[in-house]
Image (cartoon, rainbow, N blue to C red; front, top):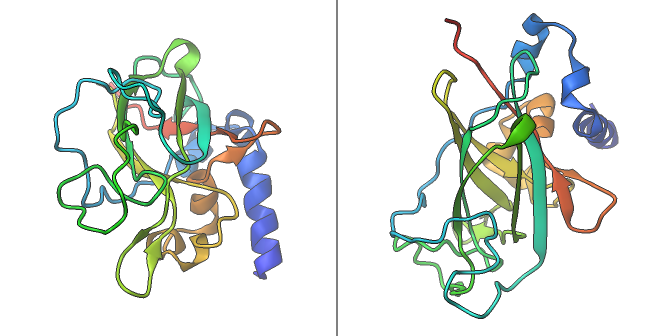
Length: 213
């Protein structure tokens, strides 16, 4: 598949409504949100503020540096039924590519006004929304960087837990990123947020596997 065809396929797949993309439960099994590794920087520093607005920290007057973005979506099961009450555990690097984690020893600055970590729940019709900053790329070594991404854990009793990463469309580092490139074209599309007509606003749906009774 050519680069142009690959890009066209991903855009079309990501832009389609997941609820209508597959008609049967058997087919829906194919489109479960792909899994990914947790990474080394899951938050370990206790913090009280873990709400849906990562651009501000409770008790501080400043706002996070970088481009502020909003991501909204829904959680479904494999039958495309919306799932309420799913716990979504989110963490990411700040706009400079720095994690708020003691093991991140890069020279990038810590942004004290960036919340860095959120734990929210899907609400009515499985909907969720959070505000954050566009994550910076962070260095793996002297020659390579990880493409911008957001880590996400989704859990609810009666469903298989999901650990994944969200990527951004058409970012130049995507096709240089080892984890992103290991996924199939379809998997890449399902892990990539969708740009809306509104600037800096994205959509992203999650598909969890409901455990049979």
